[in-house]
Image (cartoon, rainbow, N blue to C red; front, side):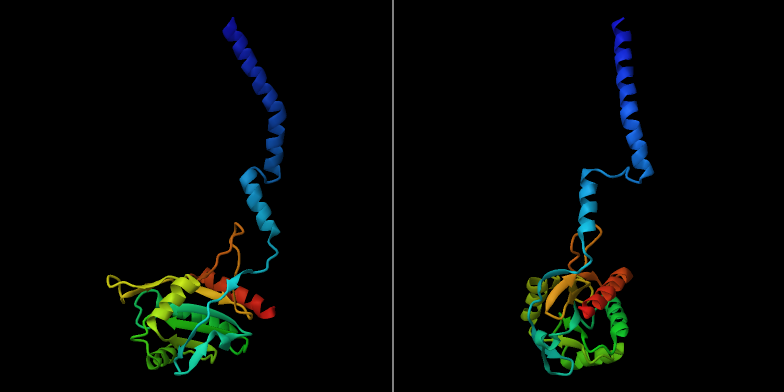
Length: 229
């Protein structure tokens, strides 16, 4: 008898739940909101609050190095310009060739615009002299006078990469080429500030993937935006 009453009680609770909850669930399904919860609602709200303007990370680290034309180039040479910066080395057998091609795509899109430039800094200055960098630029078919390949003091360059931009670069005798480094590109605006877009969760991406076609597409779009500011 008690068991029967328990079953009746449970059935009553289920019936009440169905009466009040099912219509709400159906409504959420019809409105495409079935996956929304408190956390997802917060993420959605964060994304909606993004005004589309690129995030300003802070001032780009200062540098003064020697170009492929054997002249001193500093960040001041890019004042008033939007520019992309990378770390690489000419004898790199792994990711650098892909980075080179990505940067060539970027150069081609903005070629002739005096307000755009590119900075490629070698992490192997012992080998990458101005003469070697000049040959490398010629081999790539670089046309822009605002694309500088830079070399200089090794310690200063590694500090610039690792402590300044926080773009990893290091020596490793166990890897092909003897060096390893990030394949990311930094984007700097006309005022010398590092800028970037947000990811799908509303977080700054910081840098752009120079090895991925989507990363190249994104940075091209954002360069165009900064050139209009």
